[in-house]
Image (cartoon, rainbow, N blue to C red; front, side):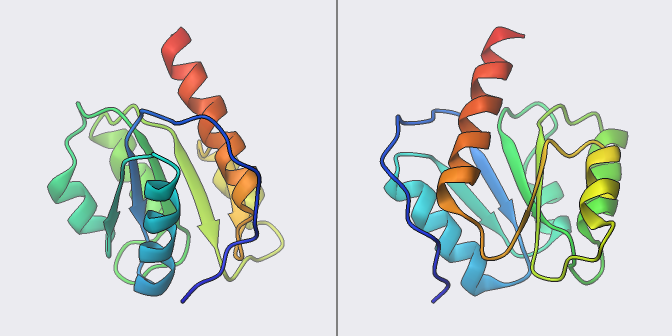
Length: 136
């Protein structure tokens, strides 16, 4: 089972989270973590399963793996933009290259994390994005 770095409790988030990662161990562990914090999260094993299941009208935040077969995280972000998804995207990776974060952020990601993901840092970004979406 994938282990996350511990954090202190925080308030519940009511925005849906969509986890897209080809590593079931990580994806399911992250889903359990978010659900245990009162955050509704759905897990998708591939970019295509996410696109087939989540419409562009749905609200939420996507947490996507950078390196996936068939459609990587950057390509998924491009498809989401082309299909008029308005949800923010957080990119995660276990195989970061020196410019991975810069490229992801330039392409529209709101945050970039390397695995293992620090729980508190991830939850802080989720909370910030939730507040930003309510203001808009």
